[in-house]
Length: 144
Image (cartoon, rainbow, N blue to C red; front, side, top):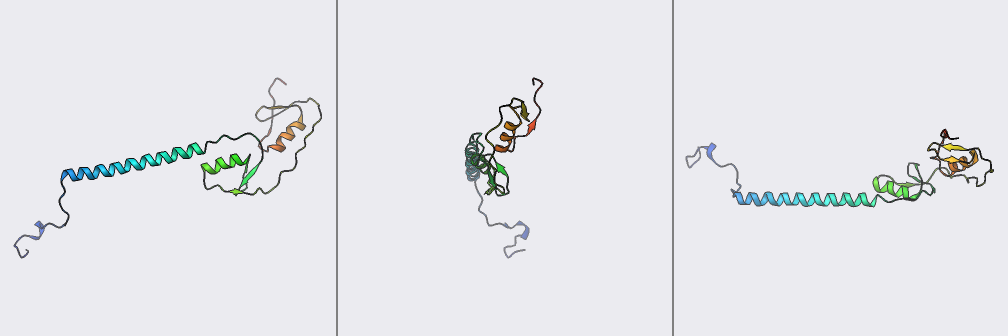
C-alpha cells in the first residue's frame, strides 16, 4: 500500500495523457496521408525510370563493353542496360575487332544465318558475322 492507502496494482503506471477519439482519428489520418504520398512518389519515380530506360536503339553495330567485358551492340544498348541495372559500369573491350572484309565474289550459293536471313554466299555471311558476332550460321528453309 502507498501512503494514500491505495493498492499498488490500481495505480496508473503510465504518464501518457489520455487522448480523445478525435485526436486519434486525426493522427491516423495524418499517418495514412503520409503513406499515400510516399506511395505516389515511389510509383512516380518507378514510372519515370522505366520511361527513361525504354530508349530505342538503332541496329548499327559499333560494339562497346561493360566493366566485365560483356559486349554490347552499341553505346545506346549499353546505356539502356545501365539505366535498367545501375550496377553495370562502362568498360574497355579486351580484344579489338579486326577489320572485316568488304568485298565478296559475286557467286550465288545461298547460305543462311540462325534467324533465316539469306546471304548470297558464305563470304557475305562471314562479313555479317565479323560485323556482328551475335549472328550465327544456320539452316536455310526448304525453298533453296
